[in-house]
Length: 134
Image (cartoon, rainbow, N blue to C red):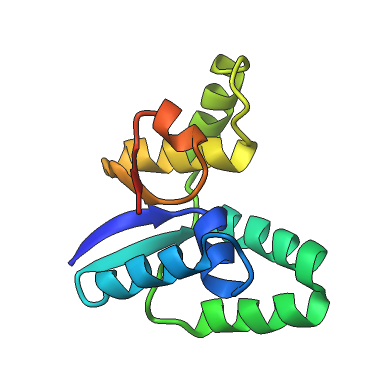
């Protein structure tokens, strides 16, 4: 089974039926079943919980967080020290970009694990040279 990264924008679209990308995210996610296991980094989980709580409220965020934590669909990944150092290096080096710190962490993880594909609706990842899906 192959892997790919997943970003907050994709998780939010999957979770929130009123998101503009919900239908597209759900269809794509279903097409992955049994073939690709998305990597969910700890920092994307944190960012997703913050976004969900801010937009949909604490009860919704807690329920979604519990779902994610119990899910066997995602491969949870804790960033190692090298990822954290490389995240800072990327963030500092590309100060002309609008990349968030979490976006930079995903690039650092992608580089370490040699992953080229990310499930996202965030255009910044194309600038990073990653293949954006769907």
